[in-house]
Length: 57
Ligand SMILES: [Zn+2]
Image (cartoon, rainbow, N blue to C red; front, side):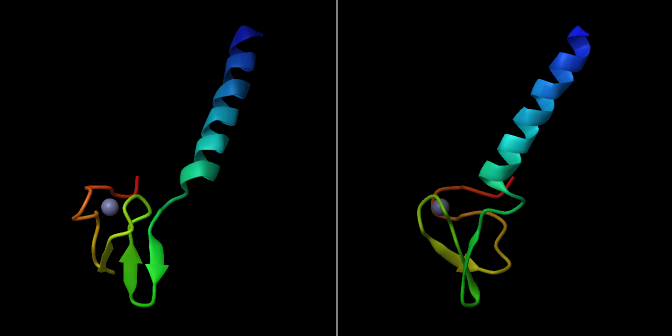
């Protein structure tokens, strides 16, 4: 009983996180990617922000 309740809460936690972050947080601008944290523009091949160090989880 207690473990079933725990699983429910854990599922809710994961669902909420998924809605907040998404698979990739880059903002796409033309052929560039924009960092959602500092607004820095990067090539589409960039895997992390060179300005503030942000990267999609
Ligand atoms: Zn940044």
